[in-house]
Amino acid sequence: MTASSLSFKLAVLFVIAGMAMGIGMAASQNHAIMPAHAHLNLLGWVSLFLFGIYYERRPALNASRMALIQVALWSVGTVIMTIAVAAIHLGYHAADPIAAISSIIVLAAMLMFAYFVFRPAPVAEASPNVRMTPAE
Ligand code: HEM
Image 1 (spheres, protein in one colour):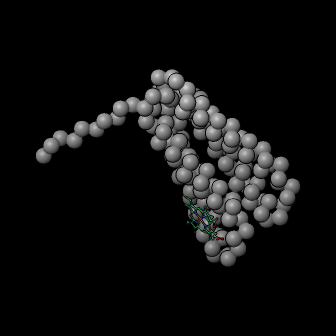
Image 2 (cartoon, protein in one colour):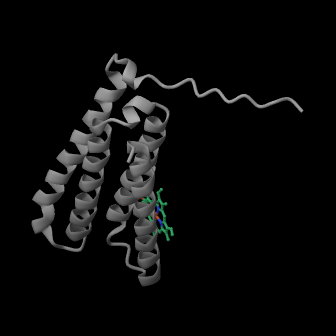
Image 3 (cartoon, protein in one colour):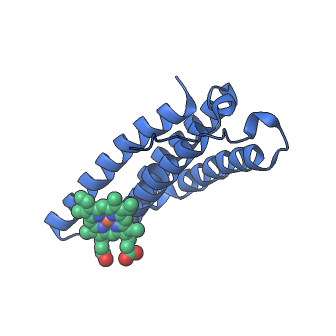
């Protein structure tokens, strides 16, 4: 599996969970876990989908194991952070260190992505991807 297809699949699963969480908050009129909902949607849906678009435009990077690891690390960090942030906002402050560890995991994944973006390697070059449309 390529990094982009893993990103898109996980992003869709995350947003379905995030939307269900939003509907649950709205229906119960209890917005206590709003920060967990916001992090799940923004890390799990928006950011992951953006990673997928970036990888899809760079076929060599997209097929690399490093990019797959970056997506997996980001996704694991997102799941742990969402659960920990929800627990904290429901009053379980013992989850504080888990939230801290998950934030380091997500930061590590973002540093990996920063490395892909900044390294001067042909593997990270965007493909021209020019689409020609025939004139009618
Ligand atoms: C079925 C879809 C969704 C429902 C029912 C829903 C519901 C909610 C609710 C009830 C809140 C709490 C508002 C408050 O307490 O002030 C909230 C906050 C938030 N939601 Fe959603 N949401 C949905 C989808 C999304 C998506 C797709 C995203 C991001 C792409 C998102 C991002 C946010 C953010 C960032 C906040 C925090 C806003 C703030 O700080 O005031 N939500 N949502």
